[in-house]
Length: 185
Image (cartoon, rainbow, N blue to C red; front, top):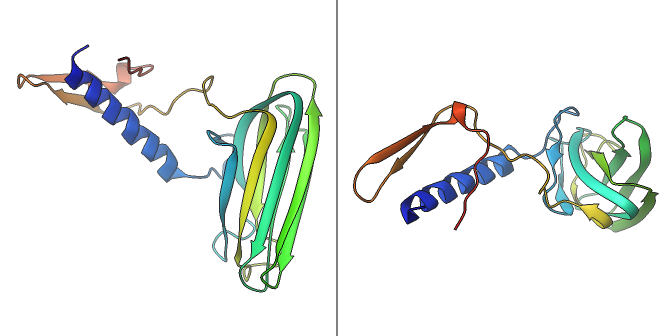
C-alpha cells in the first residue's frame, strides 16, 4: 500500500479516536462508552452532580477489583458506582463520600466464573446536591479486559474519505460502503 494512503488512513483513524474521546461519557444505558483504559477520572461539580454515566468492559473469569478514590475540593463531595451484568442484574455497588478537603478510598472485589460483558453506572455527586465540589478516580484491575480488541471501532457511516495522492490524483471512498478500517504497514 502506498505510503500516502497509509498516512491518510492513519490520520482518519486518529481523528475518529479523538472524536470518540471528545464525545466523552455516555448517559445512555443502552449505548455505554466502551472502556479502553482501566481508569475513569473526573471532577464533581454542580453541572454533573447526580448525573448517570455508563461504561462497558469485559471481565472474568476471576477476581475483579474496583478502587474508587474521592477527594473533596470544597466542603463535601461523593461518587458512586453500580456494576451490572448483561441481564441488568446488579453485581455490586459502592458510594464514597469525602468532606472538608479530605480524601476517601473504597476497594470493592467480586469474582466472575466466566468471561462477561459488564456495565458500570457511575454517579459523580448526588449525595450532597448541586453544591458538591471534588474529584474522583475509579480504577479497574484483576481479571479485566479493556483493550477493546473485540469491540467494534468508531466509524462514520456517512461522508467521503478523500485522499490526495503524491502524483496529484484523488482517491475517494464512500463511507456508506465501508464496514471496517484497518491500517497495515
